[in-house]
Length: 120
Image (cartoon, rainbow, N blue to C red):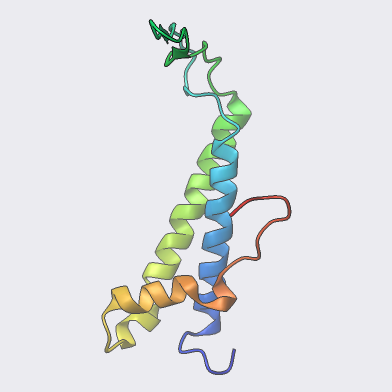
């Protein structure tokens, strides 16, 4: 984008950060509720409706592969966050960095296309 105030490498890094964060969140939705194997507990039965709320089934814990993928994705998000937040561009700003940072997050070139079949 020729009229963008942001350098292309910063826009690209922000896009990769959005994508990595989305990948990490999708990965987290596939994981058991506990990293280590844990016993579950029963829910509470509502006295009038009989509806059971709360409680958890036992967690098998994460597999070694899940732990490795979790660590990889966390490191990727962290490294991209550092790349974006320490980019030399921020030292050139007259406006507050918060305002510029918000504009970058919403820049058309830094926003990933929605995934098919995924609600936004």
